[in-house]
Image 1 (cartoon, rainbow, N blue to C red):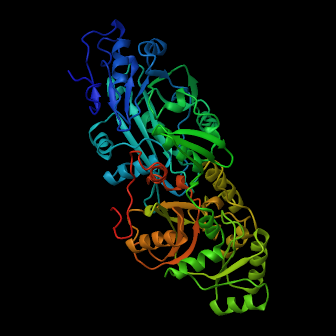
Image 2 (image 1 turned 135 degrees about the vertical axis):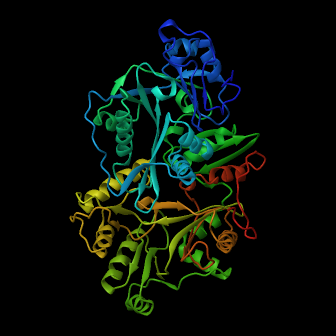
Image 3 (image 1 turned 45 degrees about the vertical axis):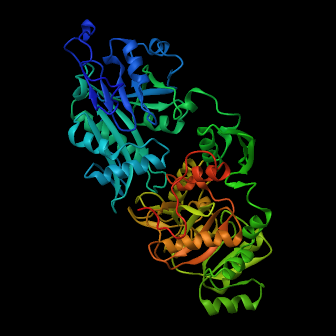
Length: 587
């Protein structure tokens, strides 16, 4: 007999006991454990002995997230190991197929299908990581897809082949001859950067339709009790709440579910929270000083450091002022041999217009400021220049005019002389449904971006957005044709609805060298260096600016928070993957 507690990688463990309750004899298998990679599903109704069930659940492997569902007496199960087990504060919802009409999912700009290759399994993990979920080994997903008929993986795929969502289903009848003829939904995840609406609902409906056609009676799912948006969606789809509980093991992943974090840690924004979580995982004490500002004191072994998100006491006031003044930043990095675009300090007279006429296309921005406020990209006419200068001047009296360079916005996160992440930042865009106006699409996309970033990212409804839409040949009241993509902001700033796409594995070593050299010239240990690049795999670039407080949460799964904590506490374990200017990035 195989013991799932001793061998957690075993896909299914059946018939571990010779005896079962009389009503289940010859009806279903005993002690059913299903391996899904991120953890195991333990079907509690198949375990006759709660002691045995507790023992298997306690055998959870490190870094995994096992779930016991359908335990006959969950309170009794927890009593067998109260220091290690807890009842999950989630609700179980059930879609009874006999009570709800089968409806085809609405697909706007994407399709739902099963897996085609191992690459799809890799893409599923990418979505998991972007959603802050535990990934699964690719081989487990692919092996389940090919060899385990009780497990079903569906993915939502855009027209260009990008996987933007995924859901996993389990067929109980196929798995263990479930007398109730049920099925369940697990790991529904939608890429938070996806611009298309209705992906989660479509995946849920597609999985339900699959099990309905197989003749199953219902499909269950588990949702955290305070996830009001998800609960509203499921109830709209016809799910009803049922008295079924899940039991989990107390581990670092589940800690927020069974313990209270230090006071006001929950109030931190994502950029501070990722650092706090990394510190707490290492046993570093976190004291929140100002949650709204993201200010914390981290303490360990007699060492204490105050941070404000990724800005710490180790960034000098001089270095911070150099980053804050974009004109000064340009001069410093230019003196270090780094390429900067042609530019001038605005004088708000004819000379500004003469410069525009000479270079043809400019970017206007205040010399001080952050989050893209007051910046206008793609100014190519005199009236537009005057308006852009006025917008920038509202943020700061000194304004910089730079020649616009072609290319995409590349952010390099440099920590302690090493590049730990590289990402392309793309301006906000919407995708047409053929039914909604552009204004409605922008509002919906803005809500999704805000939800995915803890309120940090929204698309402003201002003159810049209106003019950008107009440049695309539309007005805000127009209905955008289905599948048509429309850029609605010129800048790639994440706070204004932009999205970020990891290119750490493919960025050219010369660009990494430039990022590190710029940080060294400024004298700053932690920074986000922004370059415009025609191609991330080639060495050509133009320097744009340096950020003294880069948002580390934007670059997961790259180990930015780990690198930052390593910098603050160099004697702590857990060094990140990073490279210096003379090394090629890992591929």
